[in-house]
Length: 156
Image (cartoon, rainbow, N blue to C red):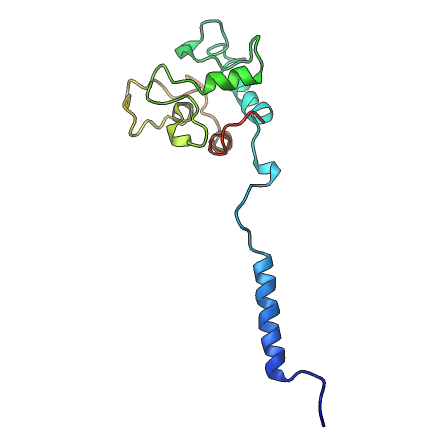
């Protein structure tokens, strides 16, 4: 008698095939991070500066800011501030304040972490960790800033 039902061997093969496909469907290809993991300049970075660098402290929010680094919008807009951030550092001219896609080449990140390892200005000529004479930025803020730089330091 001819059976239309698959044999045990065939069922096992189909089980492996379908199981493998199910596992592959759950794999992440790594592409773009979800939107909630992508920091934005206006909603994440500027408020960080507002709370600790320029707006509240006055250090980097005046007409003659400390270290020639102005971290406020002032009379400009977000694009103007971002352009200023991409300029070379006065303290360490071999680095931009923010080098899009390159956190280790971004002097601003070195300043807020206080890690000057390998920089020509190290150890004392790089200046103090920022914010100066204040509580260091929380690790979550440092991670967000590093991720924003790593993802290209874009306006939005």
